[in-house]
Length: 206
Length: 257
View 1 (cartoon, rainbow over the protein chains, first blue to last red):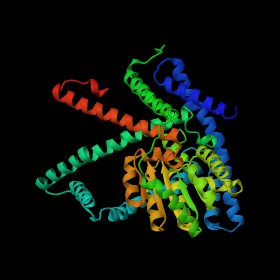
View 2 (cartoon, each protein chain N blue to C red):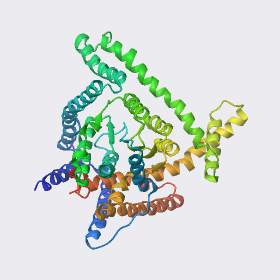
View 3 (cartoon, rainbow over the protein chains, first blue to last red):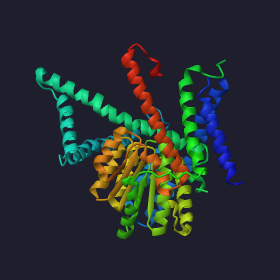
């Protein structure tokens, strides 16, 4: 019984969510809205409390143990500062909370994002070495696509650009679609395994 | 008042029902004594090697499900299925497993999955709930925190399995820079290209979803992988028929549904 009950709940929930997709009856729409909006938000809000408490405990423990103390103090300071600013001055445009968001959080996020440009360069340098025939073909295709985006004299640029788009639209797209079909089928069978109770990892595989 | 059945979804329900029947047929044939085997997947074969390396080096293992997905995504479920096997093996080898996440719901589920893995291995006392923790829901906040952790703790092995977006290459390149063995897999074709370049092993396409069956050798799960292959054959037949039809009659559109 302890194992059958969650399996039964999973089966019923899975079938209801599956069949509601094929109906535009108000009850079907209501079920969808209730599950994906209301229930989901309630679950998320409660687990967020658990998540934040876990983060607070782990960071505090690190500070007590004097491990990564600078980063831990900064993380804990940020965690406490933002809600305090929101409580103190609200979240309106001119509020201290918005100031902190725009002048601290947004630039830090932009900084991490901009690192991506350098990582793309280092990864491309490693990936585009012509060590074998397929690697050489990859290098040639990448060069054509890159050159197609560079401002060159019109007579040269047009033909290279066309070739670059052809590579993207046909050979590259064919490979992507093959992978996407595999991913789609994999997603569907994974969902079916969970709904039908074949995959029971969440029940310790019993 | 809407209709009880939305007629525009007819092709979808037909294909869905065919798929369900194929999966059920494969599942029932296991009960009839049929034995399924799938080809060797290098990325999954390397799981043992990655855990062994971390154990020998006395360094932790980092496992991230990425930032892009929540618990409703099949990719996240597939990732947690692999986590279960990884947790069981790390428990046996007494190797530290760290799982930082961006989603508190994934954190709660992962804690349960890892705990069960440790219990299955016979070492429930080795489970540390503090090693599965929530960081931030912000994409680059999460990426920066995991990057910092990789740089400071220098894990021997890194598993990047789940739904990834722009943070994929930031994490993979940082892992590469410290010389960690990296096993990656995602459902995003754009991020797959980054993983192939930066990681040692990459699970491409459906390999990520076949992983739990491959690692556990559970025949019921493997049957659904075989069902996928059968569905792929049906799709290929459909595509060939559609190509021939469209060539003979260019005005036809039935196959577009």
